[in-house]
Length: 306
Image 1: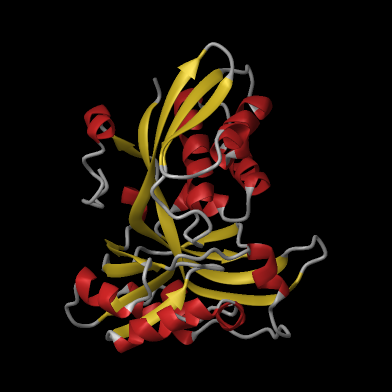
Image 2: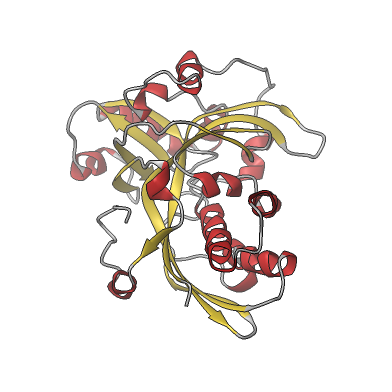
């Protein structure tokens, strides 16, 4: 038994697309931030075989799931091979731009290497990059800059933990089509607030470094419901709001007290509203869950690490 683990989500406090790469991907500049919303994974060693069962929520099962492919890749590269059974409680929206699948994959890699210790840090990072552009960030967590495809990670000092609202409309967004609908690309400097953070200056909260998302306008023009949600967040008093990744989830910060009900009353029917918070690095990487907590999933609404 390897144990049970929380697998946390991310938001992109800033996302700019500065060019197209020769490998078919886009060149990105992004500021990642871990938040408390999470999936749950339970890993159990077996003599042979690899399985993944989704016991809550909706997600691909078996090797169609990135978490199972992460286990397969680990055992291929760092033998001897071992069997593994994975159970997944899927709570993060699939295709929401919150990195749930990538987080699951990174959690599996980190848990296996914590147990077996077969891979060096560099080898583990290489495996993470081969699984997906967002996967390496989840080996680091907290606050970090992402370059290249988003997989070249520069950890930054933790921002003070702060309340953040995550809002997911009842639509899905294709990442490939979102990038295909991008307007002409122009290289721009990082916002001065993010440069200051990278240089070690004190920043009061994550809200102070919210930049822009270059994909936002194109995606909202393509999916009008997203524009409606975006406007509703500001109507409800948000000081800042941004699409995370390619969406469809938004995150928002509020200067004054608000409630889930107040937000839900202003948003389109079917939109899911979650009050969350940002997380620092220590609390967001390879976060073990007690087996009792797994059994009753009693941490569902607490959003607390540890």
